[in-house]
Amino acid sequence: MGAFLILGGALYPRVNALFKESREAGFSFVKKIILIQGGLALIASIMFYLCSAYISNIMLGREFDESIMILKLMSPMIILIVSSVILCNYVLLPLGHNKIYAKLPIFTGLLHLSYAIPLCSLYGASGASLSILITETLTFILLLIIALKKGYLKKIWKSHE
Image 1: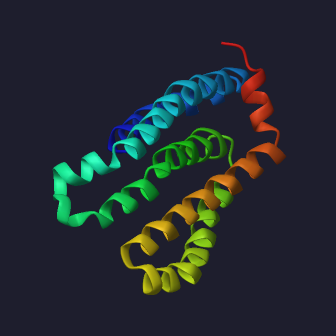
Image 2: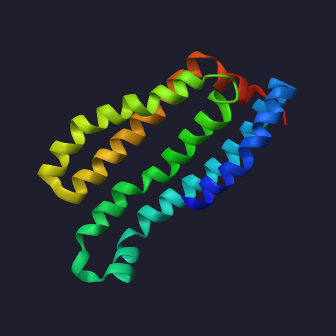
């Protein structure tokens, strides 16, 4: 995750500059980011899921088998977080949607509290992982809906490289 976030910090100024030049150039660059960074994140998520038992056994030992389920629950978060960062930082923010950018984490954070506490009480660490997965999924879905309604996804996919 760290590598994707560091890369994101490096790409943001370029995306911003391109959108100021022309929307077409910005959308075209975001398309490349989605294909490359999104593709790598998808592969990382799948590999993390498939290797969860191996990672757990090597890093923690066989006595921590419960962590395998936690790692499997966390694996989709790689692609979800990367996709959310792309939609937020490379699309909504450069196009002036600062209010959405600020309000969305507050909204999803409050929602998170409503189910995190019961899930943690019932299922411990697995419940905590599940609640984070739910929140990341909801965040991505909301960002996707916003980007769709504003017509940005259509512009991204129709852009030329």
